[in-house]
Image (cartoon, rainbow, N blue to C red; front, side, top):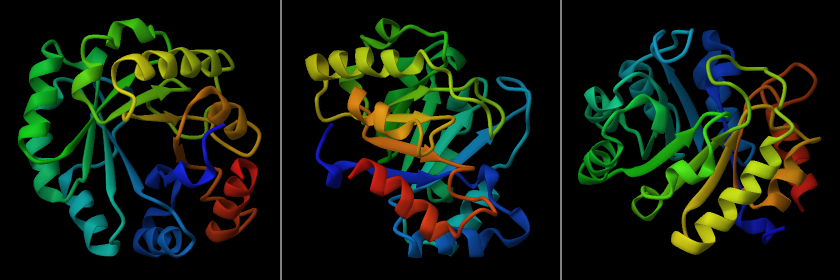
Length: 223
């Protein structure tokens, strides 16, 4: 495992109460979250619709934490400038969603934003080799994208381990993020495999505990 202080937790608002979204975000910040994760879905790349730049603007007003925007949209290059203007600190696009990935990555970088690339569960890690030197973050999806609360795909831990080896070779400072089914039962194995940035949804926003207690419980496993 890496040093505990290098781990980051990013609660996803996808599982928060949208009727009290600002309260949920502020509770995450007060509870020690490192970033807020925003899942943008277009109903085409995934079978779900969520929100656009206006919600990102509202979230930006509610917190001083970095906003980690995950675009699960087809041809994301059409929209990245809008999300950067709305307040995104990092924008992650899917390798599978754009024909000219290098161009999109460069577009985000030119806008002065951190850039990430996400891989779906069935996409091999080696397919990202050529883009790795140009990104700040690689996101391994540990569920199929589109809906919160899904069951963790068990083979994902091996995939994270293989991506960590590739990053150590080509871009050792790049963050390795995981998203999907991350909870107290799965987070320690993912950390041991090399992940250091964890998107957490229903493990944080749930009626079984406060946001602060749930975040502390996840950190306790990592420590």
